[in-house]
Image (cartoon, rainbow, N blue to C red; front, side):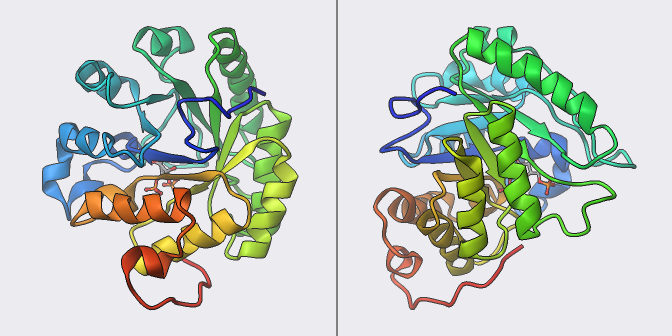
Length: 271
Ligand code: FBP
């Protein structure tokens, strides 16, 4: 695992990855409430905010838009993905090669695995090739580690999330991105299980600012190295102001309430 201290993906050892692979993963309905953001350029602009250490997109968006942003945005090439049109257990096939991502200027590689599904073995096999190719290119790898499938009764269960971060460590990821396991204690356990692999919180569906930032604050306090967030930023009516607040919580260790200039809330769980 590479030392991430001087990586362009981190600032003072922390990361805010803006994720924008939802056009593939969720489809255009993800933009219904913010129709102007169906235009990827609008979201590329958000990625130029100082708080954003990397921008995660699929090949097509990287190919079409990244040449205009390569001086202001670090590219995290999301190298597999699937649509929400298919039925059955989740499976995420590889969509482009590490060589090609490197040619397009990638600073890091992102790859989803769904531990617990009946095709876990195939995704693990694909992941090892991607991880080793990335290492050959000196590119760090962020694993989206999402336990799913029939044996997983509750995918944000603390044991499932600790298992998910551990899988990131075991399979050689530099970053492992997981859903929030509903408490700071459970997040701390998941961070411990990951050893030196950096744990990133996954943003989740859009919630109100204080609830979302309180979850981020709790995760950072528990040892998370940052987050990879999509909808809570680009579905926001004022994404740049939300990124300002996120920057304060992640990099300046302010509380969520202080970052928003509001009263604190007790943080339980969010979607
Ligand atoms: P969000 O912050 O919007 O949840 O984005 C993070 C992410 O991992 C995306 O990269 C991905 O498209 C999405 O969540 C997948 O979430 P799910 O599997 O729950 O649909």
